[in-house]
Length: 140
Image (cartoon, rainbow, N blue to C red):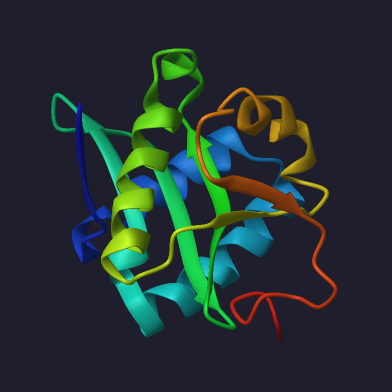
């Protein structure tokens, strides 16, 4: 599996992935956040690719000098194959390159169902936080 930075040519495939793997409400919110993050810092939008097919995507952001995982999406046919863990490892590396060593999971209602996954990563410096105010990429 290859982890790489989002490219403009990925757009339609990522939209299809989000529509397939997220609820309608979550997908709408995520599309708006994706657009903002791409305009600010596309290096924090990662793609998981297997055999030239996009199987996962992760949107990270830096807000108030802290690293956040905003959303992760894995194609239903590839869940349980380590795609999310590999994306998280790639994002952790990107954050470390920017001297951010603690990663927060944006604790919104859509990420709540992933809490067990994130808790299973006990050796990772990750915290699940309920936001007191929306991340900049979520603010309208």
